[in-house]
Image 1 (cartoon, rainbow, N blue to C red):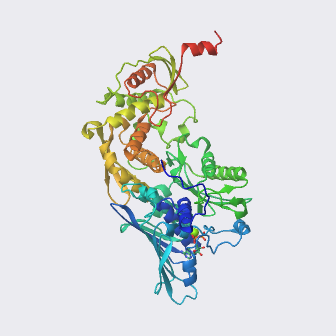
Image 2: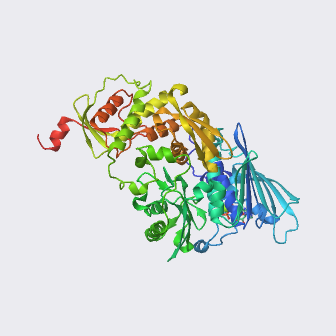
Image 3: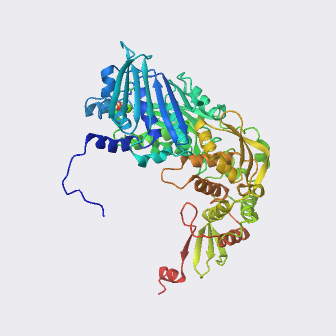
Length: 594
Ligand code: ADP
Ligand code: MG
C-alpha cells in the first residue's frame, strides 16, 4: 500500500502549481504552437514563421518567429511569470478584449514543461535585443544580444518533466498533421498575415498575407476548391459575417473543412457549423458537409472567451439568433449563386454512365431525393448488389465466425432496417448499414494479400489535397498500401490513386479516398484506437450499403448470410448495435397477452 502523507493540507510549491496549470493550456505540441502563434498575432505581427524539427523521438524543437512589437528586457523576463499579461488589467477589460490571449498563462505554462529560448527586440525604441533561456520554469540566463525587431521563441525538450504527456511525441503520431491544421486555420482567419510553416526544412504551408481571403484559400487549398466557393457577407445586428462557402458540388464527408472563427479566433463552435450546414437545406445530403471559411465578427461584449483553459470554446450570448442569421446568410448566398455543377476532369464519363452516381455524389443535387427519402430504382439495386458482391467475393468471406448463427429474412423497413428471425426464434431488427459495415470490417482486418484484393483504376484518380490532408495521408500511406490502396505522390500535395481495395467497389472514385482521409483527420485520436484500426473502420464504413438503399429480399438475405459468418455480428465496428432483438415473450408482454 502506498504510504499516506498524513492528513495535513499543504500548499503546493509554485513549480508544481505551474506544472499542473501547464497541463490545461499546453497538453500537446500543437497547443504550444497555437499559444505562441496567438501571441505573435497579438503582438501585431504581419509575418509569422513556424519551424518544426522532428526525429525518431517525435518533435524535437518548435520555433516561432514574428515581426511583432517585441519586448523590452524587463518584460521579456516577466512574461514567463504566471498571470503576467499586458493585455488586460481587470476582469471588466475582458468585455472589450480583442486580443487572443489575456490570461497570462501560456508562456509560464510552456516554460514550466520545456526549455525555452526567447530572443526579442522592441519594435519601437528598443536599444538592444534580449535573450532569455528558461528551463522547467527557472530562468537560467539573460543576455543582451542583437536581433531584428520582433520575437523568436524556441521550445525544446517539451514535456521533459511530465512523462505522461510525452506520448504525443511518438513518431508517426498525428501531431504534425494537427499542427498543420492549426496553421491552416490561422492563415484562413488572418489573411493579412504572411505565414510560413515548415517541418524539417520542408515547406508545408505558405501564404502571402495580401489581406485577401480568396488568395489565402487558393494558396492553401488550390484553385480546385477556390473555384467552387461563393462569397458570403452580411452585417446584421451584432453580427458581421464574412467569408466563403462551397457550392453543393463541393462537399465533404464531415465537418473538418468548415472553418469558423469568431473575431478571428479559432474556436470549436459546433452550433455555428451546424448553422452553416442548415443554410444548405436539402442541397446537401444528410451525411455531407460543405467546405466553408467564415469569420464571425461579433461585438466582444457578446462573447465570453473565458470558459475553456485553451480558449477553444467560447460562449456566445444570443447564440440562437446569431446562428439563425448565419443560416439565413448562407442560404441567401446559395440562392443568388450559379449552382450549375461543374464536373471535375476525369470524373465525367464515369459519373455519367454509372447508375449509382446519383445516389452518393453531390454533383447532381437537383436530381437528388430529399434527405431521408429512400433510394429506389434500378441504379440503387445495382449499387447495393455491387457492394454486397464485394464482400462475398473476398477470400475471407468465410469469416472467422463458426457460421452456426442463422438469420432468416422477413422484410425490410424504411430502406434502412431488415426484419429477420434470429437463431433462437427472436425477432431481429437489423441496421443494414451497420451490418454490412461489420462484415466489411472483419474482412478488412483479415486482409493480407494486396494483389488479390486490390483493383486497378482504369484512369488513376487525381487528388489535390490541403497541407493538412496531405500530412494525414502521408502518415497513413504505409497502412493504406497494406489495405490495398496504391497512391503515388507527384507534385506538392497531389496524389494519383491507382488502386483501391476491392471492397470499396466503384473504380474511378478517387473522392472516396478523400472522404476516408477526411474521416481520419476529424477523428479524435487522443484516446482512440490505433491508426490501423481507425483505417479499417473507416474503409468498412465507406464500402458499406447505406441506410436509404432499398435492398431486394435476395440482397437482404445475402447480407444476413454474410453477417452470420462474422465473429461479432452484434455490434458495428464503431460500437453501435447492429441489431435489436425481441423475444417472443417480450412481444407478448408488449401486446399485453400475458
Ligand atoms: P497572454 O497572451 O494571455 O497575455 P502569455 O503568457 O501568452 O499571456 O504572454 C504573456 C505576455 O508576454 C503577453 O501579454 C505579451 O505582453 C508578452 N508576449 C508574449 N509573446 C509575445 C510576442 N511574440 N511578442 C511580444 N510580446 C509577447
Ligand atoms: Mg498568449
